[in-house]
Length: 240
Ligand code: URA
Image 1 (cartoon, rainbow, N blue to C red):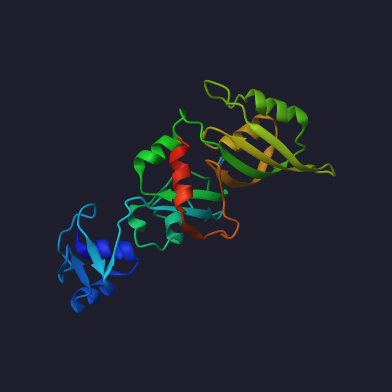
Image 2 (cartoon, rainbow, N blue to C red):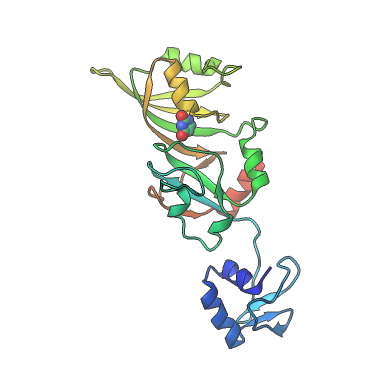
């Protein structure tokens, strides 16, 4: 890896800022002052210091993002804003979303740089739980709760896995509406919307509030992100 890239990534600064440090002689590699940005280093083995302080390289990068409605869960798109357009992080180029939220869905999305972990988290083998809050057109009933618990036929080979549906509030005045919380342990295409559709109801608002037991940080407004804490990153790994 190039020294200037390593320094930019570890410090969160731009490469031009990093070049200044190199020129100033503020950087050492294994005890020797290094001034060339293109110097090749091994981030796992070499000891790099900046102004006398040793830098440690973290290979894993993970962000918690509060996806707003109206952006696509992709890293690039010709026509529409993507989730990555909201992220200004020195290692943004390495990041991709874990799974998908629909264009109109809001809420928790992890952006990470570990393809293997992402693959496992999305694998049907691990049943990583995801909790959603939704607004429903129609009256959600205890019968719906039981049906979700038993599994819903959404037109796939098998019924959906048991899901926990909680009725938060029902407004019976015409036209009736309901607020619910739903936890599912799989991630089929448009799954929540299709589950309600199969019960003759329509999701009018959808937000993911938790995944893998990690709640969306309430301090994050739609469009905002922060790095995952070490505990959260560990929890992602433990979930699968
Ligand atoms: N289920 C849906 O229908 N849409 C989403 O974005 C996520 C889950």
